[in-house]
Image (cartoon, rainbow, N blue to C red; front, side, top):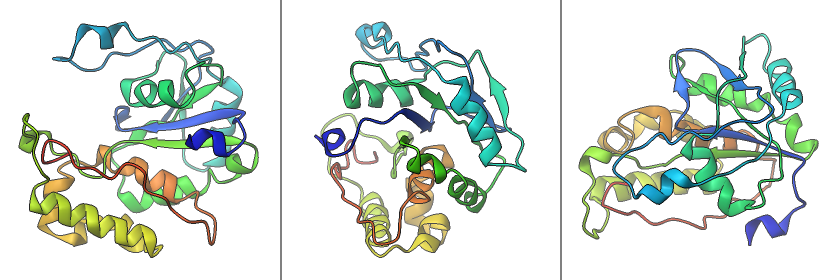
Length: 220
């Protein structure tokens, strides 16, 4: 229903929690392959296809926008599950060009937020910027049976929601100031950082709507 509320994008820039490393990269292949970067799940998930085209042109534009940061093009990188598991529900026809921008985990959250601001012109050109991750993501604490959220998970989720509503970007960027709840909810940053790429695209006065605000397994 959400994607029916705005025009079909010309292209999609995806920032996924599942592509991260010690440098900045962007996919540049014309026909990215599938990456099944998980284990222990039903075999059917490793049969999923999302044959969206890539876009060397968009990859080049991303490189230009974020200068002077150096972005390496990666023509071999495919779509990881952080990308296709979301996009196959948003645009199941897989007919929109998709480019993935990796996360440089050598850099702090403020760097990511500032970098993401440079991507704002893409929205004006009809490019959909998507962040794929989790606000609360602690797999070690996850409980398999249906379980309410841990108190720390609920506290962190609520603090993030309040900051979103109040446009308190300082709290959202410097989330570690939220103490133990943040340390347990974000034990490593890769699942949280995609949120900052979305926040950086927010126009003045643009509201935020939460449509999936459930904690599952206690810690996701």
